[in-house]
Length: 223
Image (cartoon, rainbow, N blue to C red):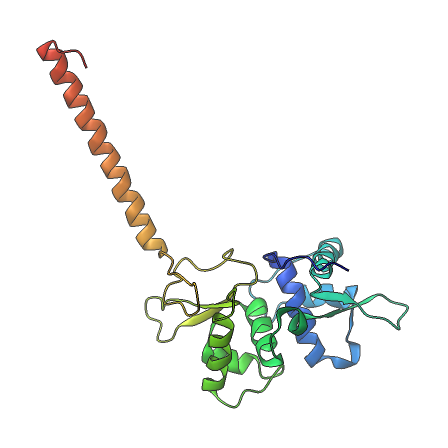
């Protein structure tokens, strides 16, 4: 079997993968998950950001995408089709990193302290420094799997985001990065200011062109 290259995941594929990892630890008696349980896990209202309403067909399509990437597969030994993840082996990361990535996929960007708390049921980290050590390791992989975001106004700590969906869905301010080949992004406010300045420059150029054309006309000079 030829394993497809690991492309960026869709947001729903990331949600499905995160749910599979989460439920493996939180409801081991019903893992691997049936399609109904997987849909319920994707659409649950708690511990999810954003909250979504995915249909069975949409979740099944996402599962097929993960299966093609060898990130998930169908379990055996049951009359009902059940699904389980293969995230650690496919990405070549330890269980601690799998737990961190799953929580980031399910809850969005978080600080190190938030990750330690929210990972409690998936993996119990000894302290904050151990969480950060695994995050830095993930950020330094090739390609990077996580990104440390720049602190926003009023924020005391940086948040981390996963990169399994590529840059899609990342907050606009994504500088202060860690990892080989990482490059800072432009904040939304900076981008807006640059666009405004570019618009003003275009307006000045048009005004100058109009003035020059009028002057040439008055002097009888052809452009």
